[in-house]
Image (cartoon, rainbow, N blue to C red; front, side, top):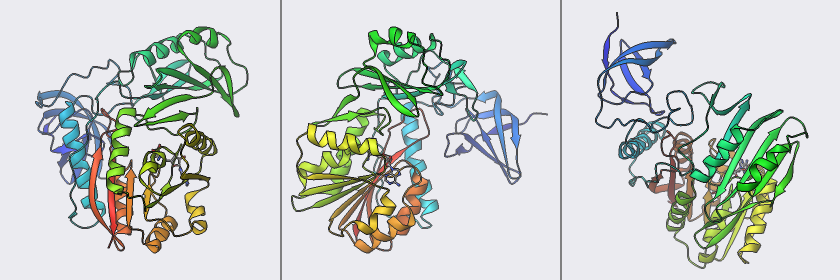
Length: 409
Ligand SMILES: C[S@@+](CC[C@H](N)C(=O)[O-])C[C@H]1O[C@@H](n2cnc3c(N)ncnc32)[C@H](O)[C@@H]1O
């Protein structure tokens, strides 16, 4: 006999949560206060997963997802919620995670989230290829075929459509990148051999500015070697495999926050750890004495150096190395450190150096509030968190970016 449940709240992945008989049930596509009949799809010791069979009442914050693939596709998670509610939920999620993982009530202010355009914001997508072309299904590596994605602009959608009509033998993934600044597109085919279908070039040439094939190494087969993007007053080069923020308009707001939190004067020296193509360091360079950027990806460092030259900046240097390996070789002479690590956050060696160095301000850009909370907890002995602002870089998904500033105690 099916039972009707009320959804208590959302979990950190945007699923409806029900607490019953000492167990939690995670329900896909269910919003707080909705009354739902559910069907259990998975059962573990203390938790169950379920789908909704019937909605007995619907939330006033529920909207019809614009995307026809939404029910199956794993790319978006919360498109059934209006955008204002998505933002409020992300703010709550950040507060909850920090309170839980910092093991104490957080006392510093958390500002309102910086909102984004909810659709058409992505400058990069990765299509999976295995006979079909599309995105991965939710929690699976089956492919949902797509010919359109609402998270990218019309020009990128033309390219997605064209790619789905190509014969893609020996290809496992296609990456499409777009520059808002030049309105240009780069396409990268990940191949298991050097032999590629030459029709790719013929078909894509009219609307694509760079085509790469990657099998062991990158091979430019048509067009120019890189795209250029503009953030603030600077032009940045994007190579096929370098990290670049996927939401260009939000990236500028993110970097503005970093600048504001860094509170630079011309006397400050800045260390930009996990610097990618040097974007943050270059953005900050006019406001301080000098910057050093450290990044593990060789191609990203080549791009960073080209960006330095392109923008005629003479107070920045870049080093290609693993941050953790590099810490003991870096002289403790920086007044401000900016860190923007991958989801895994900072390793214990880097944290220990940052604590020893006692820099005046530390700006932490994070794409995972759980690892951020862990790292803030570890840094708290020496630094005091002054303020944090969430930034919505990825609307329609459960991801949230945060920027925060710590001062030496
Ligand atoms: C979130 S991105 C930030 C990039 C840059 N700050 C930006 O805004 O474009 C993280 C960067 O850290 C780099 N990275 C990952 N692990 C690293 C490590 N152990 N040492 C140095 N860089 C690393 C990645 O290659 C990536 O470019």
